[in-house]
Image 1 (tube, rainbow, N blue to C red):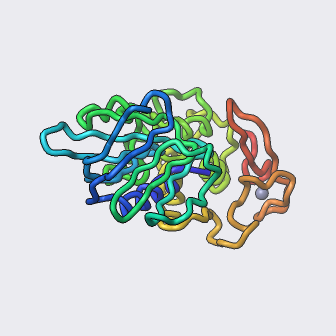
Image 2: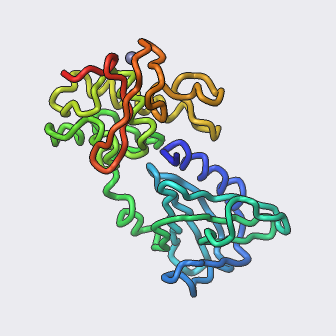
Length: 262
Ligand SMILES: [Zn+2]
C-alpha cells in the first residue's frame, strides 16, 4: 500500500539511481508527454511530498523543471543497471523510462505524470497539508486544518491530504485502533487531536527505509498490523473479531470493543 513511507522510500531509490546524473534518454508512454525528450537534463533532486514524487531537473539556460508522479494504489518506480532485465511489473504497465550512463529508472502504473517548471510545483502539491515526513512537519498546523471541519469523521479527516500529507488507509486504521477511536467519531468528538496526528506521524516515520510496513513492531507475515486487513480475526488486545466496513470511498477496519461507538 503506497503511503507516505513507501513514497519516501521510492524517492530514495530514484535519488540513488539518478541524482547528479545527466539523462541520456527518456521514454514517456503517456499520450500527453509522448513527445517529451529529457535527454541532456540533469537530475538535481528526488523529493517526496506526502504521496507525491518530485524529480527536479536542471539544464543550462533553461528554467528548472519538475517531473511529478503519483503512485496511488499500484504504482512503483524501479532502478536497474544498464542492460539488466526489467523485472518489476509487466511491460504494458511501464509509463516512464529515464536513462543515464549508469542507471535506468522505470516507472510502472504511475498516475498524474506531469512536467512543470519547478517554480510552479505548488500547482501540484501546494494544496497539501503538512508532510508527515517533511522537514516542515507541523502537528499544530495539521490539527488546525482538521479542526476546520468538526463534523467530518476522524477517519476521513486523517485521509484528507489537505489536512496532513502521507496517511493512507493502513496508517489511518492502525492509528485509530491505537488511540481507541471508533472510525466514525466526528472530529468534534476526538479529545486529543494532537496526540492522534503525532501517532500517525510516528507510525509512518518508523517505516522509512524498509518496504515491509508494520505498526506492531513485528515484521513477520501476518503480524504487521492490529486491525488493517484482519477482518474476522481476533483482536490482538481483546480477542474480539475485527470488523470491516465501507466508509466513504474507502474500507475501514476496527475492533468494536477497543474502539467502541460513543
Ligand atoms: Zn480489541
